[in-house]
Image (cartoon, rainbow, N blue to C red; front, side):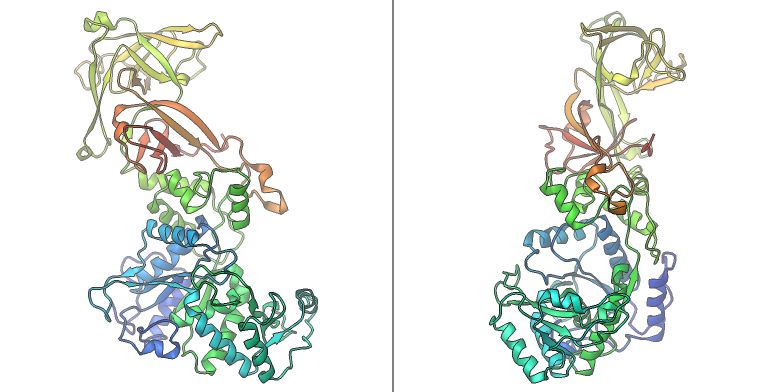
Length: 608
């Protein structure tokens, strides 16, 4: 890796530039962080920099709150932070911003950790200069720094930059003002630091009820930026924390904790989405006060904001996602229709497709841009098509009987061996082997008694090829008592087997897939589609539940070729003619219950 003060040319093979890349390259060129030495333990204040030199040139972080499951928008933040660190010889931290114990659970911590690793990003650095041969984790928790945050709060109180406010929440809201009206100073704002410090320590000792008072920054109640009107830094909350237990009854606000975490971990470029842009002045104010007091060292991290990823036909609000789960509109956080990363994984999307999708969505400050869901499917097809094995599956089975089978092969029980490449462009992937017999399953949609114009599949008198097998001529169909199709009848044309010298002796316009009745396997195939019918389900305050797609899940009792009998959970295939499918990671069992989820079709068909 390059040293921190080396020339800051863009890395070899760098992606097209954007404003965050330009900022990083300018900092590297100027040597903004060249004197920085990483080492020690985060939370040790300025002495954190006293360790050995770290080869990292920049540090970024992905800082989720462990109060829900990650969704597709988080995938872009993960991609951006980890890829920038990689591109510039740096390190990206996975940090859990666990400052709200009432909503945070270990379940969410574990799921976040799993999804970051699944996307392909490792948070362990194998070469620890302090402990050779050991792994050093780049994984942190805001709660690791609660002691330091307490000291930082006391410093702000002693320096006159913070005070304890005993107004009610309603009074604080009423005196905050709005965009056209300045706020009004709290009657507790000018209390002496010593008195504020005493009340603060009473808060920490649990001598006051939840909500009785808060610690506020003392900035400017007339600021045009409402976020600078004496924002709350700490509140009283008696709740057991997943990491610190019952040690604390006061907890920092996210906006207070976040810049401190960045500084203690010596993040260089703190990348957020645009909703945090108005918080940047407070971010800078707080770090400047703590540097002035000697608790932190310069230069501080700098915050950069980019537009969040808005994807059509998706909601990403944690509240709304939780509502979908709790009210039973989906089967859980990993339901394959959910935009959670757990759901996308179970649906069958690959880490490669999500990274490509994030990259193609761009890094800009345009906040009202929407990305079509079809772009995600396009990225999936592009990454999966070159590697996915092929297979035949019949999703709406209809029996076809070859009437002259015994005449051609000498016995009704004869089984004709057939084969097909596992992948048409990769012979090294081998072949699939199956048989053709007198009875096969075909798609219900492959037969029409009175064909529409342009229909080249089965109808009386027409010839088609059974893919990888023979040409057959349709004789018609039999119907059941209700008038529905029960069996299609056909004759086989000798010497037309695929791959044989006579294969092209009969020209046909139609080729259909099939599975033999003899070795076909039953399988449940779940045909997933978009969860909402509208591109922006909650636009204009609309009830997003009112536009749930009633056809977001259809279940087919299918017949699949025998090669799929040993498919492993999460193994992906292209079912010929139908699209891309994955063996369900939870309910599929090789050799037992076969269950496949449709990821996407072979082409975008939404709206047709």
